[in-house]
Length: 419
Image: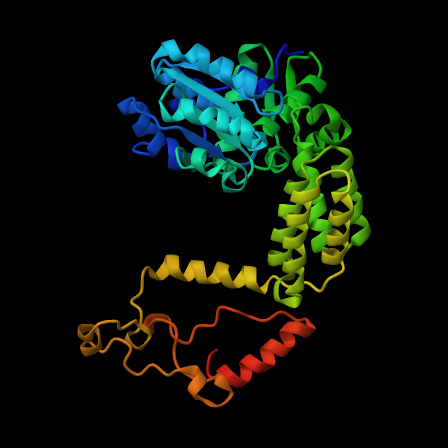
């Protein structure tokens, strides 16, 4: 039995050993350049669990030979922050303060950091799974670079698995991977989940010196030992996933059950409320536009009253969204539009749609031929609003629900020529 989690034992110490996040750590990327030049800004790593936020902070500090202080936003307060700052003063700017789950810091706790960050007493590195623009105060956020970390790709997970297998071999344990899909699937792009699952499988394999890994074995062991597997808190993300999928699947009973699990588990109510806003836009959308209004009102109310009363507001909104008609047409439309932009680049704006505030622009035919919709019957007139290269393309497809069926009929009358 290992004396420490496998993820901790195999935590990389240099960028060359680090897997994933090539947009930040690869050759010529921002963090690689910062370490090479020896100048790093205060920064916030934003991404899901198990993708290397804490590891990157350690690597930055070690690579630049800087003093490293760490605080958890869950257990630390203003007193602890000030204590670290006092210790860092004589280090003359050679100190990094790493704050895990910085989104849980209160405004007063974040305010206590500002002066030290502004004067360069400490370089702040924060880690968060939440959008920092919601939870980090603007003065502090404006002094930090925000770097987004992504779930690990299968190729990254494969690299990590091979590293772990080699480590076990050095300990006298031979791992034969007959099937690896379940390990990757269960990890969900999370390195810690991958290592926890592997450690569990190897431990269950006994002391015979050889462990064969199959998909069935992984699924059976991980499901039977969920509590052990979840000791680092991964269940939090599994429960919110079940909650979202229950609402999307129009099951109010399942949705309110998973909501209750989060309530009883002490989940941050604003975290739940934000997910409800996303659900309202992504999964209900134009089938019931009032859903977004209610979800937004829910977030405001939760912010005002907090636990325990806000559980009622969360329940009301959850049940409303779960029982509402569903449509992901808005989500699909913006996805298609973004794909088109990425494929076609910055296409020129058609002349008739351009603004013409100067005489020169008018002489260049800016705005020429534009038809003002309100000058026509029904406040509509056909004209092309897309760039010439993609004109006539259809990106929005109304869903099959009463609200969007009406939209489809109206759009057909207007745009029967657009296929």
